[in-house]
Length: 591
Ligand code: AGP
Image (tube, rainbow, N blue to C red; front, side):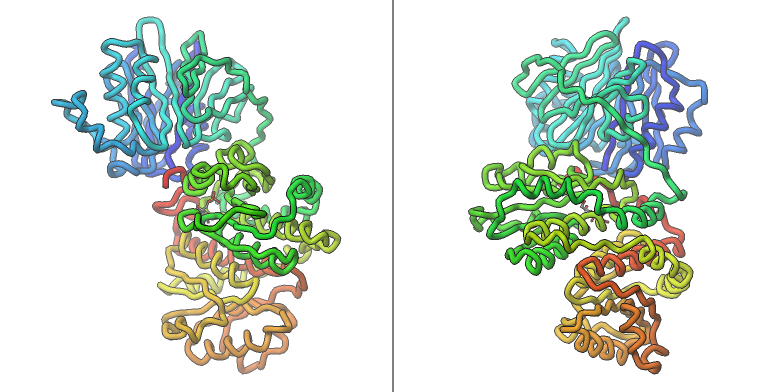
C-alpha cells in the first residue's frame, strides 16, 4: 500500500540516494510515485510517474540535490491512479504526502472552509492540505497541523512540509497506519512508513504512537502526543539493520529459495518459542485469526493443535470474527507476517479486554499487532518483499507446529525436513517448468488435498491466483462429489495432492480415479511410495511429481514448495510481474 519517505537535512542530499530509499518501498505495492525537491530559488519542484521508481530516476539529473525531499509511492484508494492524483500535492509553501483514507471526507467537504474552493485532484489528501493551508493563514504551521488532525477521521499518516524564509519544517502525523521517524548518522532526519527504507546509515528510530505529531525543523525536533502535550522523544531504538541479500533478480524466487536454509535450520528458534509459550496457561480453546496466507496457515494450525495438543481450535478471518463467543480460558492467536494488516489490527484494538490473552505471530517486531498483543513470536525469516507470502507462510507453519507440540508437552518429537529433502524438491524444477508451461494455457485450476493437504491446496490456489492470474480454487479432495466434480472437464485441470496417511490413502486414491475419469489434465503430487504403487495405466494419464516420503506433521511443506515453484513458473511463463502483481499490496494498511 502507499509509502511515505521524506527527509530534511541542513546539508543538501543527492536525489539519487533518496530514490534508493524510496525504491525500498516498492515492494509494498503502488501504482504511481512522486517526489518534491527544492530548486535553486528554494521553490518546490515536483516529479511524478505512473510507472516505476526507475522512471523517476530517468527524470532527475544525477547531480540534483536538495535539503528537503518529500517522496511517496501511491496505491490508489481515493481517486484513480493518475498523475493529477499522484502525491506529493503542493499549495504555495506547503506540500504533503499521505497514506490512508479520510473517512469523513464527504462530511468535511460540506464545511464552510471549502465553500468556493475548487479541488484540483480527486484525493482526500488534498483536503488535508487545504485544511492546513487554511489554518496557516492565522496560525503557525504546527498549530495548523494540530487543528487539522482534530477534524480528520480514519487511519491516516501524513508528512507535510512548509518552506519559509530561512526555515524549512516538516510535520508528521499518524493514526493506525505505520510511520517511523529516524535519525541518520549524518544528522539527516527522515520519516518513512517502513523501517527498512530508512535502514541505510540509520542511527536510531522512533515508531510513532497513534495521534503523535513529530515536528522537525533544520535545528529542532519536537514530539506532541495525542493530548497535544509536548513530550520527550526518548524511545529512540538503536538501529542494527542489515539489508537482506538477494540471490536472484526476482524477490519471490529468491524467497522461495531462502526456504532451503530456513526450514532445515528452524530448530534454532525452538528455545525462543518455548520461552514465550511456557508463559501461557494451557487454554481450553484457541481462536486463530488471520487474512490470506496467514488464514491458510491458521487452517493447518487448527489441525496441528487439535491433533497434538487436544485443544479445540477455530480459525477466523478478522471480518468474520464472532463476538458472541466468550473469552474464558481462551487463547487468541493472531497471525500476520507484516503485523500491520488493518483488518486484523482494528479487530484486536476494538476489544482490547476481550483479546487480552493474545499471542501474535509476525515477521516484524516493531509493528502495530505486536504492540497490541500480550505475547509475541517473531517468525525471524528476514524481510519478505515479494507480495506473495512464501517463506513467511512456511515459517508460520513451523512456528504453529512447534507451539502445538509445546502445548502437548511432546516437544522432543520435532523433526524438520533436512536440507537434502528440501534440495530434492528443488531438483524437480526442470520438470515443474515444463508442467507450468502446459498449465499456464488454462483459465481455471482446482487444487485438491485432504487433511493437512487441504490448507496447502488453499494456499497453492491463492498463490496461483495472485501471481499468475489464473482462477484457482482449493478444496478438500473428499468433497468433490458434493459440488466441484460438476466442473471437471478437459478445460478444467486438477492439481491433486495425495498424502501417505494410511487411514485415508484408499479414499484419496479413489477420489483421484474419479477425477481421472473426468479430465485429461491432472497434476498429481504424492509421496514416492504412493506413486510407486499406482497402476502404470493410471500413471500414463497424469503428470506426476513424487515427493520424498516424510512421515510427520511437516510433510505438507514438501507439497507447498513444489506448488510455490509451480505458481512462480506459471507466472514466469506468462511474463508477469511476479514480485508486484496487479492491484495487490504487500502490507494492507487500509480495510
Ligand atoms: C499472500 O500471498 C497474500 N499476499 C495475502 O493474502 C496476505 O497473506 C494477507 O494480505 C495477509 O497479510 P499479513 O500476513 O501481512 O497479515
